[in-house]
Length: 291
Image (tube, rainbow, N blue to C red):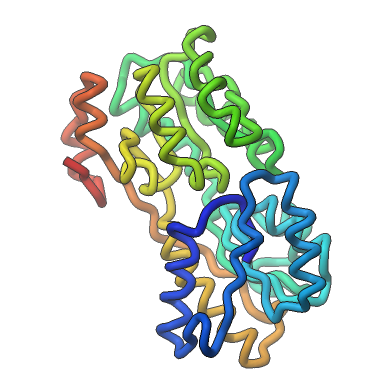
């Protein structure tokens, strides 16, 4: 398994999905998590090590990790879990017939960034300038900023990139946000941010800005609101494709599955701390409300 982050949500979900199909980690299958790294520039080394070990399958989390794994091997099957378009990245030919050594699960939803901004403004209607927290070292986060700009124009909002490259920069960069007259934040669903969600949420709490996140893992640790895919479900889904490969199927013949379950989560304690009254229109739609 290769990606940027810890295993506190991804690996248990993968294990659960595999266990439901008869595999037991440490007994009938072994999951190597040593390649979950804390920064993107260590992914190349991690991928090379997995290739040298001649693992049977690589499970990758995120577009950058998948791209690095794909560069490292064209023969070992790769099952990705990612929010990007693998066709645009040149990883597969089509979603229905990948054609190479990559298959997996994508959370691809072109309108999701606009939906997050809509929810953020609904929760905090007075906002005007939104900082989009992203990692410029990612294969997709900076290039996808144009989607945020297009969505913001429709809502008559302004967006600015807030760039964080490594975990060690989180506190400093977030601490400088107010100097840029930013009055709200949107955190992309990048793997580095999910892995360091407690630190990121704590840093944002100090500057007291309403923030929308990419998945429910953030409200779970004190973030205000999120809209996005259930990442754990994605890994359970990916386990089915790992199973097919271990039983002899070629990844190029396994269609890439698209996640269809998107969740709205709200943390009322975070809202109270910010002095925000979450509208009923949001609470009625929410899949998870943390009180």
